[in-house]
Every structure is written in C-alpha cells, then in structure tokens.
Image (cartoon, rainbow, N blue to C red; front, side):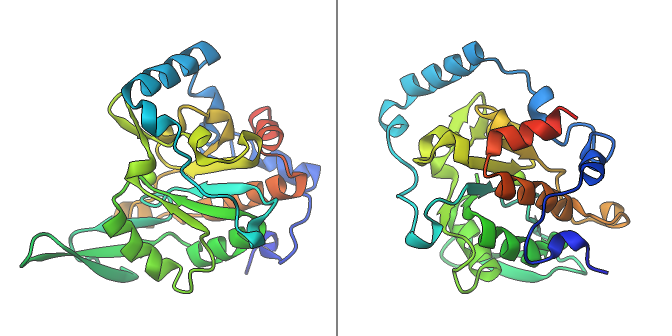
Length: 250
Ligand SMILES: [Mg+2]
C-alpha cells in the first residue's frame, strides 16, 4: 500500500503525525544540527582558511540563475552515492543497471548500481516541488553516466555539480552552499556524509547511508519516504531554516 504522503498534493502533517518524526522515529541523529557543534566563530575560520587557499574559486558562482520553470522554488541539493544509489565494482544479484568507465585506452571498469528503494518516485515528487541540484563529490565522468540513466529525459534534475564544486577542507570534500548563487534561506541539502554540510548544518538533513549488501537488505530502507515527508513540509512552509528547526526542536 502506498503511503498517503505520496499523494500528488502535499498536505500539512497533523500535529500527531509530526511528533512521530522525532528522534525516536529516525536514527538518533537524523537531523545533524545537534550533533555537529560548529559555532559561528569556527565557521568563519573555516571560510577564511578556505578563502586563503583558493581565493579565486571562492568568488566563482557554482550555479547560473534559476531556469524559468524553477523561478522562486527552493533549491534542493541531493548527494548521489549512498544517498540515492549504491555502487559496486563486483556484480551483485539485484543490481538495477550497470555502467562502464574507461580505466585507460584499452580497459574499462564495469560498475553495478542499485537504486535506493522508491528513488524514482522520490525524484519525481521532489522535482515537482523544488529546483533539484545533484551535488556529488564524485567525478563528472562517473556521475554523468549514472544520472543519464536516473534522469533519462533530463527533466528531473536542473543542475549537476561535481567534485570540482566542492571545497576541500580538513581532508574532506565539503559542499559549501554559500557558493551556489542561491539565497541561504532557500536552499537545503540531503547527504549521508555529515562533513559534506559542515559549513551549513542548519540547512541540512542527514540521511542514513544506503549500502547494497545482504545485511542491510534484510531491513526495509524507507529513508527516502521519511525524508519526503519533511520535504513536503519545507515546500508547504516555503521556509528551510525554520521548518528544519521545528524537527530538531522536537
Ligand atoms: Mg554520499
């Protein structure tokens, strides 16, 4: 049976339903704000160090203006690996599709990809509500092959950002939303790697990483369904910071 949250028109969740989405419903640190203690002073330090390292890149806007069909929409940044898909170099029984990447002039590497449960529906519903930016720390050659299959008509994902758009900080690829040419009050990110959004944790939803192996497959992965219910509220309230804060304060 399809959950009522997948009805075409999102509705405000009743109070009783919202209370279900507290920490006991998700994993304890589903919303990462309380877990990553990063104060403004520390954040400025991060930015300053970053600016000193790559002063030119700092001022380069990573996204153009919103397309006509996206004007006024909140921007939703989605991570790829372990958020939407799981990729394996060895053949797995239940993979959804495979791609081949060149290793050198003669050899190729085949990769087997498993889509997270409900991924297609998730992308469809999100594209109706938000401007979707696929923001991955992976390289373009790999990500494009995957995304051309996930979004074959190129009408779900508005923009793609790759490793080159990340900020390298403390050994991690950080996705700095300040660089995306969007109002910080109208942008959010969903990622399984907490360091990805360490500069703007108040704009982030942390999602449990998705791995395609037998152990985790014994459990039903309903993370995208759970996240969608939060996103529907963000869409209705048209306010990222306050809506996500309301979940954190439960
Ligand atoms: Mg990831």
